[in-house]
Amino acid sequence: MAKAKRAKRPPRQWKDKFLAELARTSNVAAAARKANVDPGAVYKARRSDAEFYRNWQEALAEGYDNLEMDLLRRLRIGELTGGGPTKSRRKFDNAIAFRLLAAHREAVGRQKALRANEDEDAIIASINEKLSKMRERRLAMEAETGKAGVYRVDPDGE
Image (cartoon, rainbow, N blue to C red; front, top):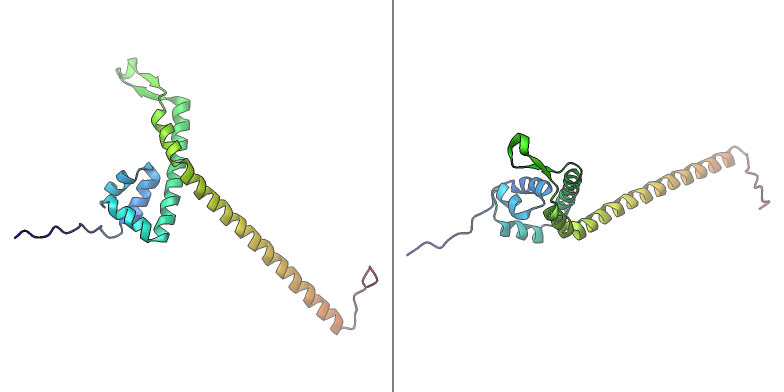
């Protein structure tokens, strides 16, 4: 009687290694190999773990930025190809990089929009906090001047 085949369990602490490689390569299969985990387990974790999903999106955004920088480097200097040191020539073939950029553009656009929204929320919170402190100071000043018998003169006569 043959033993039932057990699913291989992912190694401990694989997520950080996977995310680092995903940010470096923008390639889920390669990142899973590097983290020594089955790609199916990676996708399952992404579906079930909101924090991992968010980190995955950030890693893809970082990978996209890296890809963009690499593409710019290739466009500027090209890549040396064959022929040895004296017969090498520069190749400016970027078809694969363009396809990868196009494949990730939408997902990365969403992630960048989320980042911008978080920044906007932080700015609004900061402004609201400053306004609250200004109100508190004004109320404290008005209370103090009332105790001392000094009354505020309203320039509008109200």
